[in-house]
Length: 155
Image 1 (cartoon, rainbow, N blue to C red):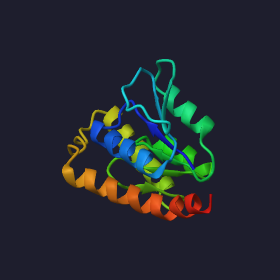
Image 2: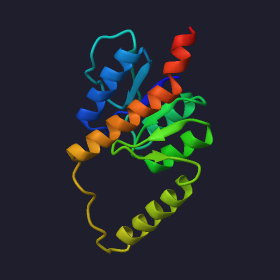
Image 3: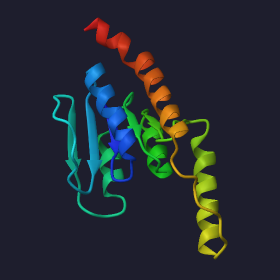
């Protein structure tokens, strides 16, 4: 298992949580973005820099994700691609995208895009909060405990 992060838009606090989790649990963490990023030196943390463009990082993540990998993203179309490949997708607010909810999320995203494109104000997303950070950290911890800790002990 590896963790991939759609790093261009991820909040710094989420990256920090992931850096600590990767080192503590010895899980490969790969940041994917269209610019250079700072991250702690660790044998478990690396980065891939892609060309500038709206979907370049998403395309690279979708290309390298494997079944069982965890992808951190708020991008719903990317989450759909990850779930279709057997991966897990977790957004920075601590919500998993699953086979059961991803199509509904895509439909809602498309509806909101259509409304905005027609000039209707749909309101902004709430600011990232400490509650969101805690929800993310809790979900990540549960995921790692469930999907990684047992395999690490078997090595």
